[in-house]
Length: 271
Ligand SMILES: NC(=O)c1ccc[n+]([C@@H]2O[C@H](COP(=O)([O-])OP(=O)(O)OC[C@H]3O[C@@H](n4cnc5c(N)ncnc54)[C@H](O)[C@@H]3O)[C@@H](O)[C@H]2O)c1
View 1: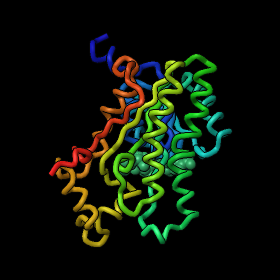
View 2: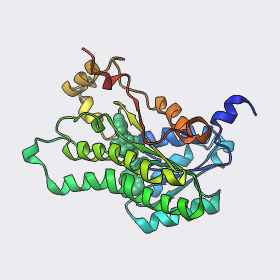
View 3: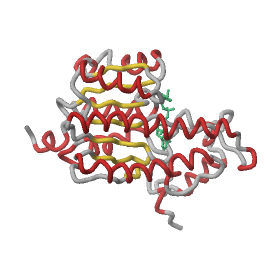
View 4: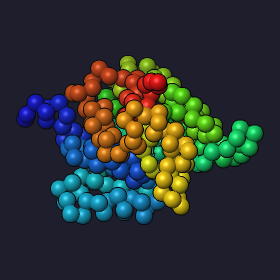
């Protein structure tokens, strides 16, 4: 085995990627697959699972290590079943990516719709972190598996983004809980880290950043670009390296409780 394989190969390991058919989840799942892992994608609908698996039609070597399950990650029982199904299909999962989350539009504070506010907290925190972590860590502790969790934080975890109140709250909490859970689970050899993507055009934010009619950046999009030293939005493929690094216990075995910004320098706040 070469040095690089020893350091980064995930061969023989099973990764579960919640929200794995989404824009970022797809790239992270693909990175884990290409690094040798068996990958089980959890997604809301059968169609999204099928669309993910269809990507590997022409790459059967990868396709046979990919599997998908349509579940609601906000349902504890369904998550238990998914853990069992992943174990039966491949081996007990050792890597969990918490990739469920997203935002819905922006408003003035005084116009917050409380039902929507709660939905966004539930999406990002309950389904996006707490329930999958609870189910997987419970199983990992019982089965003495030293697992690795990768959460999805955001620029909003560090500095508020205007008008996205529930998203700000949820992502600040995601960073906090990444550290808190890392502390709690360290005694069991379980690592909890996060990746904080800068601005990548996805379903959740495209209309905020790009004008549908003209295809040009909106005022908010321009503000983001002005604030990003690299002067561009990220390409989701640029999240692959941090994913493999955090998943590999050889490469990042002493790394826990951190959130790695992949943001073109957005957090530098330089003038
Ligand atoms: N796109 C960005 O620029 C960006 C930046 C920073 C952080 N993030 C975070 O990265 C994560 C992924 O974002 P994305 O842009 O890929 O979003 P996305 O909407 O493309 O993907 C999320 C996926 O999760 C699935 N999902 C939603 N609720 C679910 C549930 N209850 N059970 C199972 N699946 C469910 C959706 O169907 C979707 O496929 C989110 O936490 C997001 O906040 C994204």
